[in-house]
Length: 232
Image 1 (cartoon, rainbow, N blue to C red):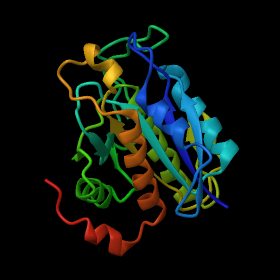
Image 2 (spheres, helix red, strand yellow; image 1 turned 30 degrees about the horizontal axis):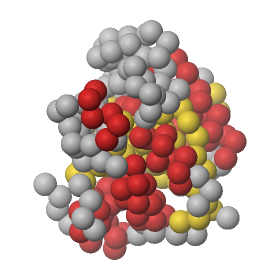
Image 3 (cartoon, rainbow, N blue to C red; image 1 turned 180 degrees about the vertical axis):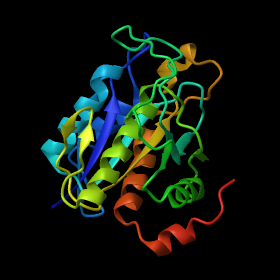
C-alpha cells in the first residue's frame, strides 16, 4: 500500500503541547485516498531535526511527505509555498541552540517550492468552511529548516532516480518522484494564553481539515492544481 509520511514536532518554547504532533498522531494509521498515514514526531532541535527526518524517510519509504508545524502567531491553517535556505532563530530550540543567519544546506539553492497542490488544498479547505491561507513564508526556525531539508532531499531523489541523498550527511533512500511539503497550524484553545495575538482552532477541527488535505495530496493531478485557481 502507498504511504504518506506525516511529521509533527514535539512541544517547544515552554509549551506543553504542539498541535502539529497532536494532529499527526491522530491521523496515524488511517487510510486516506488509498494511502496509509504514518506519523513521526520530530525534535524541535536544529541539530537533530534533519537526522530524524532522514531516518523516517529511510525507514518508511513514503510516496508522499507532509510536514506539520505550529505557527503561534497565526489564526489559520497555512499551506506553505516556499522553503528558504536560512536558519535564523528568534528563540532557542529545545537544546538551547539559537543559530543566526546560517544556511540549512551550505551551497544549496536559495529556495524550494512545495511539491504539493497548495492552492487546491487552500481552496478546498476554504470552501469546506475552514480558516486557511496560502503562505509565502515558513519563517526561519526549525519548521522552515525541516521544510527546506525535506525538499532538498526529495530534489536529490528525483535527480538520482532511486536515492534522495544527503540530508544532514546521510542517504535517505527515498525513491524517485516522492512529493513533499509543509503546513503550519494555529494554536489550540489550551494555548490561547501563550498566543493572545492569534485565534485558536480546536484539535478536532484541525484533524478534520488535515484529513481533507492529505486526501488531496494523494489525489494530486494537473487538473486539481488548475482547479485551485488564484489564491490571494
